Image (cartoon, rainbow, N blue to C red; front, side, top):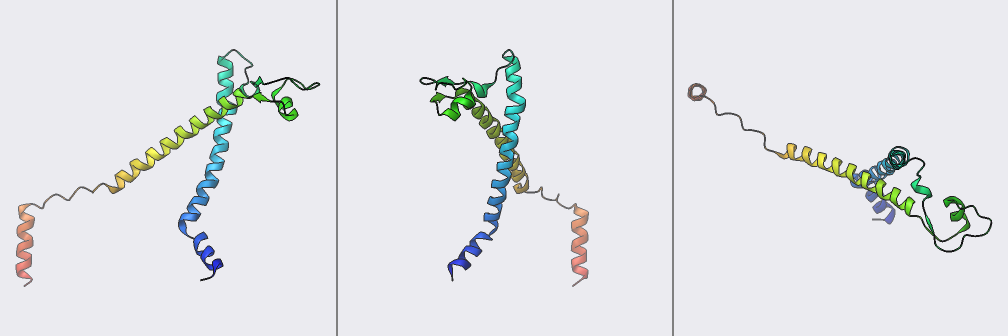
Length: 143
């Protein structure tokens, strides 16, 4: 078997396609979660903390700032200044916690569905004496 044929067989298996779909959906879901954190949750946290509190622009400069560079996160990062961007880290951690919780809820729901599908259906109630008697008579007549 040629390597091309083996690769084609591998790539077209159901598991590989399922994985590809999962990765694509996961990437899109990650963007939704990032937007939820940055555009909804962090502004609410900022409001609660007293106003214009942007976590992304919170950092600790580790050394001297380059001359002529504004003391903003973006400008210092572009200039290559050493800094500890703790605000960005906090945003990413909140993003991760939300994403992990949503995945936990999804897995929990899937497990519940699997348990319901694998549970044995209740057995049919035993037939009454009359039904048993009729079956016995029917069997004797058909002989």
